[in-house]
Length: 339
Image (cartoon, rainbow, N blue to C red; front, top):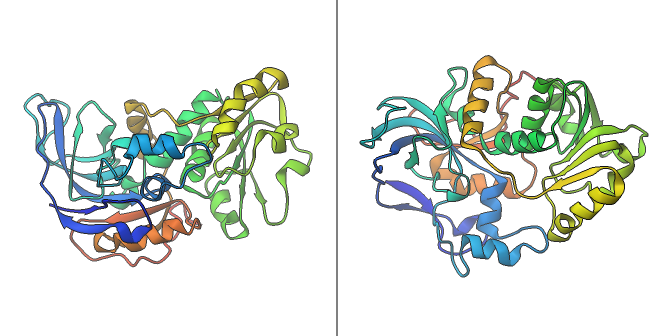
C-alpha cells in the first residue's frame, strides 16, 4: 500500500510517499480502506518535535529518541471496512466507519487496522468522508476537557482559540451542553465562530478579553496564550481554567494555583475514551456537531498539507483525501455550518 513515511524529525519535506506492507487484521481488528484523513497539530508536533517548554525529552521518549518509532503519521480516518478478523462481530465488510488512532498514529496511508472495540464508530450519514475524517482529533480533546470541567447548562464559557480544530469543536459541544459561549478569535474568523453557536465573539486583535470586566465559569485556552496569571480575574470564584497547551512549569503549578485561588486549573494531555468517538458520531448524526474543514488536499499533496498546518493559520481542520474520484481544490473551503 502507499503511505507517507518519515525517518527523521524536521520540516514537512521529511515526508516521503512509499510502498509499505498492507496490514493484516488481528482476530479482534477491522481493516479499513481509508478514504480521508487529516493533518493535525498533533502530527506537526510529532514530526517537528516542537512542543511546549519542558516536554522535549518526554516527546522523544514517546516518539523515538533518534528517529520515529512509528514512521507513519496521522491520527484520524474515515473509510470503509475491507476485511475483519475472526472474532469481530460489531462491523462487517463494506461498513463506512470513522476512527481515531491517537498516539498510535498510522493513518497517513491507504489502510489501517483498528480494534473493533477501540475508538471506531459507524460513519455518520450526515457527513461526507472528508468531513467525517475530521470528527475526532478536536472533538475528543474538547469533549474530554469540558467533561473534566463539569460544564453545566447555563454556565458561561469562554473559548480562547475558537477557530481551530479544538476550538470549533468546543464551541459546538459547549453550546450543545447548554452553556453560554464566548469565542475569541481573529477578525477573519468572527463570522465562522458565531455560526457555530457562540453567543458572543471577541476579536483578540481589537480587545483583550481579560480586561473587559466579564467573568466566566469556564475558560478554555486552546492556543496557549491565556495562562492563569493573565486570566485569573476573568474567572468567577469556583471557575475552571482549561489549559490545553501548557508547558511543564504551568502543569506543575496547576495544583498549587487551584489550592490557593478558589479556582480550578486543569492542565495536561487529553484522555481519549473509545466511546467518545461514538458520542461524536451520534452528535454529528443529529446535527448537533459538525467538523469544520479549512482545506482538502489530494493524498499526493500531503507535504503541502503539512506546510499549511505549520503556518498556524488553519481554520478548523485540514483534510487529505485518498479515495478515487474528482480531486477537491486545496483552496479554503466554505464553512460547513453555512457562514
